[in-house]
Length: 65
Ligand SMILES: [Zn+2]
Image (tube, rainbow, N blue to C red; front, side, top):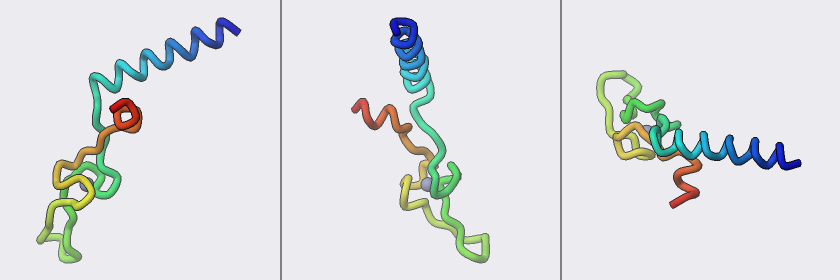
C-alpha cells in the first residue's frame, strides 16, 4: 500500500515538474498554428480559441491556478 502511495507521489512530482518546464500544449483547434485558414488556404485569421498564440495551458496547470 505504501509502495502505491509512493509511486503516485513520484508520478505527481514528475508531472508537476513537467508542468513547470512545459506549461503549454498545442491548441486543439488550430494544432498549434495559431491560424484559422480560409477555404482557399491563402487568407487566414487568428485562431479564436487561442487568440493566435497557438498554445493552450495544460490541464494540470489550469487546475493548479
Ligand atoms: Zn488555436
